[in-house]
Length: 326
Ligand code: ACO
Image (cartoon, rainbow, N blue to C red; front, side, top):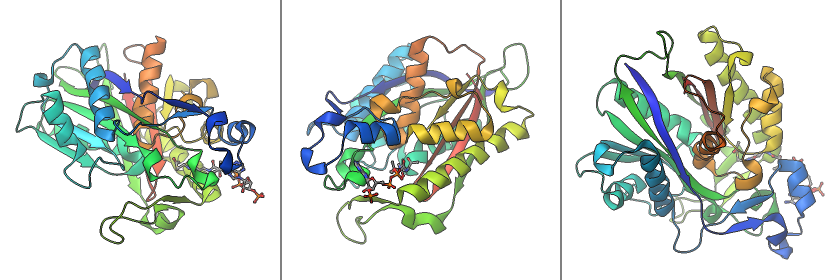
């Protein structure tokens, strides 16, 4: 058996905010933001748009694309750092609102910008263990609610959105061999808690009873993102005898165009195979990989069996990568 992505979907808030529409008090510019990050705009959730509403819309889109109904799902996992409420989990809201059968497992997982990679890893394990047969794996965030809108060094970088995949067991398939190999080949989930201080919120329910704002040592995060995403990708490829040239599509976490370019250069992969949605979406944390995957799928370039790598890094630091055949 193989664990395959059957379909992908996504959802964005209604309002896109171009760099020029950011508050003048920030004393930033379209030129500064584009040249340092590649970001041209971000989507910002309105008051009635929350992480759960975005997650539900992304999940609906993935189910439609899969030709499935909510009753066909037996697990919901949401990667998020910005849940609607401290508890219960956004995944339980998705289960209820969407009409996924009561009693199915539903939980959130928090690994910040690596959240979707971790969620895929955990879902893959549960599917391999046959604890479920078909799951919705969702990355959903309203990162703009965690920002200090007076800090131009962070608030220009993030946006809101959600992406979802339907992940399922397919019997009689193998991800590496057979006439039509397909599915997850291998994955890595890593963390180094000694680096908490370079990317974190100064707040949370237990310490401050509020959510706190995001703080970041930009240059340090940049350096670790390039080093750690590159080495996770190379380790996975090496373990299975692939070279970076063999990979048709790289779908990395969308933090910054310069990080994507530096990772491509470091591993020696053609930069045009790196999917980039950073200009349109900015950094949507756990949502960025499935949002980028959906863009790639809609572009029509993706073919069954294509070798693909996803990779992400975020606060913790937590990072990881997934190697699969589409
Ligand atoms: N507009 C205008 N000027 C700004 C802005 C802004 N939005 N932000 C910072 N500046 C100024 C700084 O104040 C500084 O001015 P000074 O020289 O007078 O002190 C100057 O620009 C340069 O600042 P640096 O921090 O040195 O700029 P740098 O080139 O390092 O770029 C950036 C900053 C874009 C944050 C970069 O470090 C980066 O991309 N880091 C990666 C961080 C990231 O993407 N994190 C996302 C979360 S983690 C993840 O998803 C991987």
